[in-house]
Image (cartoon, rainbow, N blue to C red; front, side, top):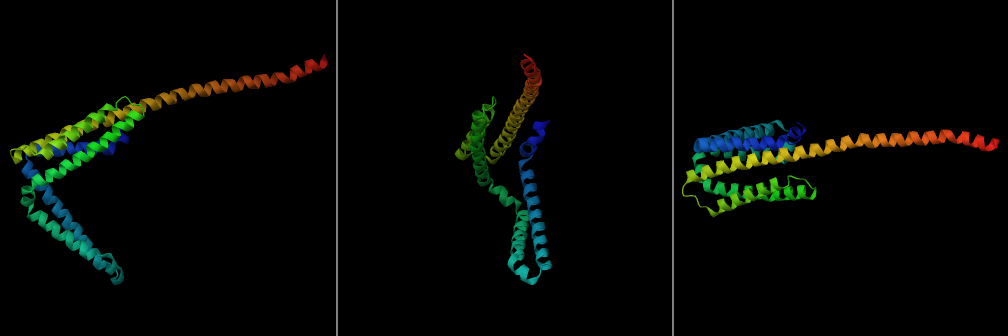
Length: 221
């Protein structure tokens, strides 16, 4: 349970990736279009709030904040996303390249994760190493652009998201479980050390209590 709480953010992100991957496999066009439209409405809401905040500020403070400019930019971007979602879908190959770059960066980060575990002498260091290899291979595969159709590209993206997320969850749970075992072993060892120290202190006190008797005997002789 402690490993779950400690890695809650990472596990939640992996679960989110799995859900996105499944939705891409079920209906990629509708899902992607819905996401783009939702982002558009969020941008419009943020822009409206920024413009409203501009008029609520004092004139001198508002002149330095540039809230009006940010609000207008967000508003225009939001309207474009909400009304031109198909344009983004037509540029999906470019978005896939960006996804490949993100996977490559994640793979390089996992390499350091694997070396961190290896240097700390953890047994499961090879799990993030395998995950890093898979991520880098997926990125190289995307950059090679062997897809005959956009549909094939959607399927590959969904499968890669699901596979990497599952592997990352396993790595997080196993590495956290190993850390808990080591901590419990250290805690079990500490009471034994404390008991030994307490016995040594009692033996020392016993010897000190006998010293006056020894002096009295020597004096009487």
